[in-house]
Length: 562
Image (cartoon, rainbow, N blue to C red; front, side, top):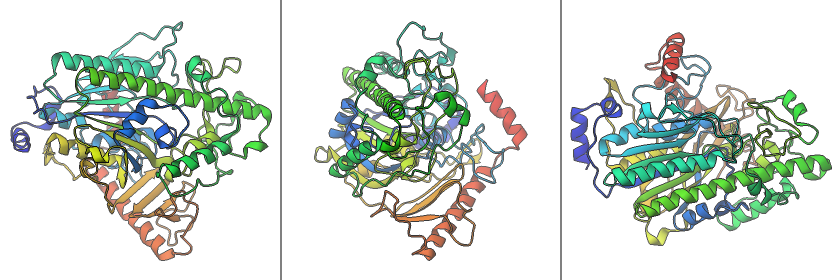
């Protein structure tokens, strides 16, 4: 297979393949690939990761597959999706900011030509690719190599979506009288694409990228789903954190207790007008539960019940997709992944359709967010939230299921190896027998920073010595082996002579990031700070290598969005 692919690359360019070249069928051993992505899911929200929310379909995948305990994303929606679909750090491909990048403060409109998305790389090997749900990458799925795409762009409502499209053509809004939620739509179109594949392309492998929009705010769900959890969270976020903390240890996922909630850490962005509109039940700090007023406790517990309902509904809809894989006899040789694009969110805001205080919480006319209290509990056993690069912001559950590839003796086991979303592309390319081209449109293709998960999936767990790097909106970190240096956006710059507010942790003992060793081990902290800066400079140089001036970049980005 590798020889065939190399021959194909000798006579056709990747771009030619991406715009419609007919592809030959791939041999049967090439696995189908399904990547299911949640949005703002906490590390311990799933039952198989210590949560109390009913997720039987994902739990079954974990029971017969693998659970990874140290997989990382890139802390936020669009950076994580860029890493997942290109195999590069998001700053390398200009999909997240880094001081000194060309193109202004948010250079997210122009991905380098040498960084195609995974479907364009898979097409010469015979794969057909399908996208359903949230996008949040530049351009659109069809232009990036997907054969079919259901795009849900209505990020400000989960019930009765209005703004969605199929293969680039707008669809009518869902009727206001219906009770349709976006998770059902994402699953329905995925099933439709898979049925079409079984009818017309059964001899070819497929890649399905399934992106649910939940449990991202606003918290909205079907009334029946909410009712299942209405009284579950009245004991509060401290009790929930302790409860989940015990379970994640019992499951062997970690070896530490949850860190104390940080009362001084609220949402990453402050919207005082939103707090006023949401009323006296809202609070933007994770203070001890007993210090809340009765009204606040009721309001906060109701929000968590809606969050749970959204996760529960997503699992039910995932079950429909799994049933379709079984029905089309693709179950055994389909490699299924499940993960989240970042940790649970501490954000509190009101936007989109606004918030009607008289509307039932969780309905289409309400707009509430999880907030830092229950976000801390959902991210158990880690610290902080989405957008931070402490463990609570970047650690994701990762389930891998593949009956044909995972040895029977390994099923249901854990993988403690350190992994990252940048590893997904090299994993799939190895299994598909695809070699990346040396150049695209005459532009040299840089090496991928990640490494394949295949040895972990088809073999045994192993200790990989990884060097990983993060940056998002001033939050930054580097991990070398078990050592992690991390700083929030309000900390000194990494070029400072002394680490200052940089925090140093030994993650082999303290993934809860509770014992800062920077003052005890200043030399190690300095070394890691210098490493972070060197990697940042290398990433900046690569991103700027063929970047266009900001004005041109804006015009090109606008053209791509039309």
